[in-house]
Length: 229
Ligand SMILES: Nc1ncnc2c1ncn2[C@@H]1O[C@H](COP(=O)(O)OP(=O)(O)OP(=O)(O)O)[C@@H](O)[C@H]1O
Picture 1 (cartoon, rainbow, N blue to C red):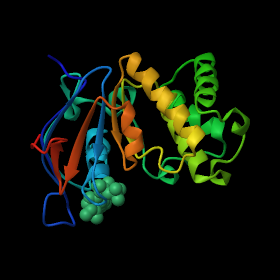
Picture 2 (picture 1 turned 180 degrees about the vertical axis):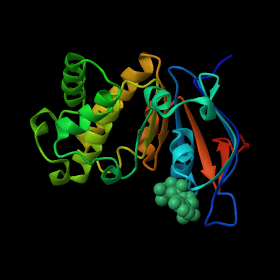
Picture 3 (picture 1 turned 30 degrees about the vertical axis):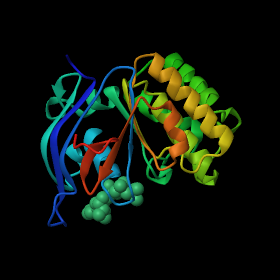
């Protein structure tokens, strides 16, 4: 069976470190599945997200061993555009993700780079803003928004790419109760559409939308019952 995401024996070491931050990670996510990874701060969750999303293929920050497969194809064999079309990541800190002068430009950036037709881009902006309940901020400067609003715009900018795989790295950490409900409902809808989703979470109340939970501890990934992945 081809999994949407499959990670085999992944190890990652930052050049500035003497030990591997990720140590022999194995995981699989199917179409329509939500996998949540929990773990204490500094245990490697963001590093894992950056490896899976292909960011470390392009930013030479360390050495990566093992294999990451998207729909059966190694990440190493995919171009940057192929990866962006397949996998969307919402970063933990929205300030690292938002750089456009307006919310509209921010959401349009990905689809424009995929050279989509103008009316498709407009539709995707409208839809993404509606999903995150931020229509009234369309022409606002993202820098002037609150942390939670920035997280919602970061999510909208990934939704507009319509990838098959979503990675949410604590994407709801600054969002208020109403925003969390919107995001959770959208994740449920994405799951129904057959998207594969990896969520990194600190807040255990968000686990209700997960199919499976794994724990990352000191660079190793465990099933929730404590057995090594
Ligand atoms: N760019 C980097 N260069 C060197 N070491 C790094 C870098 N980024 C992260 N690390 C280190 O890798 C380890 C794992 O960090 P990471 O951010 O992946 O953990 P995390 O579980 O996501 O933590 P948090 O929940 O606080 O975000 C930490 O020891 C961190 O200091």
